[in-house]
Length: 295
Image 1 (tube, rainbow, N blue to C red):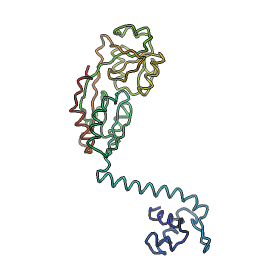
Image 2 (tube, rainbow, N blue to C red; image 1 turned 90 degrees about the vertical axis):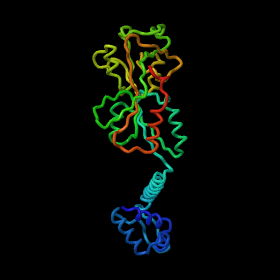
Image 3 (cartoon, rainbow, N blue to C red; image 1 turned 30 degrees about the horizontal axis):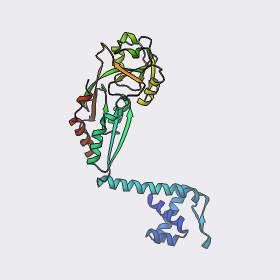
């Protein structure tokens, strides 16, 4: 099925007349007739019943009409979008961001990017470590922002942004909430909340001497919002990066004697040509002052 055939059919469906449809499409009537016949052969039935002044669409033609209309409009939209992209009216930019990274920290540089690229079309995708690596490898993301990916891939470029500490987060009525800091031994018996795909999960388990499978040792959620909801219901405690979002009823305090840290970095693919917005965002992130977030 060709777009030309679809255009001829849509014109024929409007006019119910081969001569007028051919004039509208600026082709000869025999050419339009042959194209419609080829389309009917492909679909396995007549699309139009020719009865002089009473020509009308068949049941097949009526069923095909809305589908072909959407197909044709989608093709036109794709063509216009491609034209806009090539003329720089639209500047697509896809970013993969770890579930555990607070994107709010990056809003100033993203806002600066928008001021410089009026036609930017931003797509932010969240994921765990495996998701982010997959998006970078398959070209689904121009850049990624995450903690340590620990990926043995020679094409993975990494630019550290800042290093942050880990803290304990819990409900303000939790028995540990009255302390100024918490030693790992006091977490024995507590339900620990983890975010799915957390890049530092194994590192945290080792430093806190959490044995076995942490998935059965605590609860696991995906988003910051869900994590805060569980904490607000006092259903456990969480080990969170110091730059994680805050909430009114949640107390945050240092983890004593652990030295738990993680480096947040921006990642790209070595040797892959970046779009102008992607290159600009990378430069903005690398040149920004991140000292207030550093451990």
